Image 1 (tube, rainbow, N blue to C red):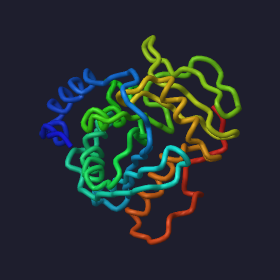
Image 2: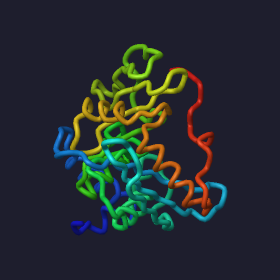
Image 3: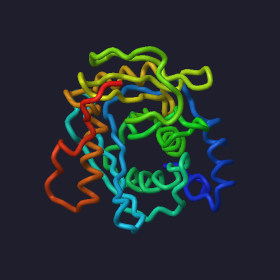
Length: 244
């Protein structure tokens, strides 16, 4: 893995973090820039806000692109070294994800990141930040809206979609992935076009609201946090039967 500037992971203050976000946002590639996809990754973090310890548990999984069977998994638990500031959560979470990436036996060719990509006030959600820092193709898979609003009414069927528009620009796609469930908001992370990102998410659906790489990463992050041998029930996954 290439050397990563220290400020990209642990900026000393908010002013530096803002400058780093602008720099990294300028490095994001919103076009397809990857070869054959043999392994698909999922990235997620888990933490207990009631514990007061400010610890981030990060998990990365790699699945076979052919059948979405798990191939590898790695995790890292680190203290968050940046304060909680809305819009800057990547600086709390990306260092632990980078540590997990370094221990992943079979690095994926494309990574689904639980969170926003370009659909961010400064165009650098965690999917963009992780993608640029690692220089890997990433997709943002978010469960709620950070900026923008859907342009039009979203249909009820899996695969129905409408653009999420902010300041006159499409920053994500509101995508129905399961009937009678809230949509996901799919955005470019790095080195992938938005339509390609949506297509990959649809390919990786297996009857749940979350695409399989994200779902497996969610379960892995919870296992890491809980320290349990058995995975938590799928009932813990966000799958509320509400419609947008």
